[in-house]
Length: 125
Figure (cartoon, rainbow, N blue to C red):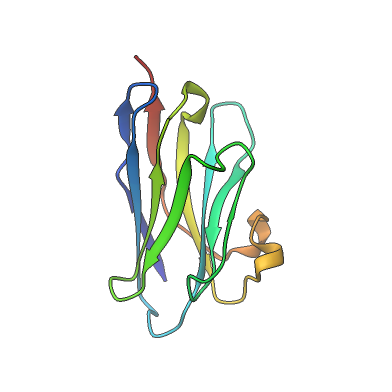
């Protein structure tokens, strides 16, 4: 299974940005998916996640109300719509996937076997 994250870039504070994560490989199976981020000198942290069916989502408190995670199963792609971006949202954003992740475990890095390469998001004027 391979994950390809894209859509990062430079955006001014308050602006929007949409990230995409395309999954390829063993796509006959379904996967719970998530976004994590890592800023320089900090640990990788959970941002948002979505269940295999898309029926359940979860968000970090720091992004709740500003970010929306979704998926298009036909396109085998997960999205992260980020609005009202703040400088503290600047980080490398990684997507992750796993066949067995449950809603209760979606915030843990260790719950995911497959990771994308990351895409840089910089929020600055």
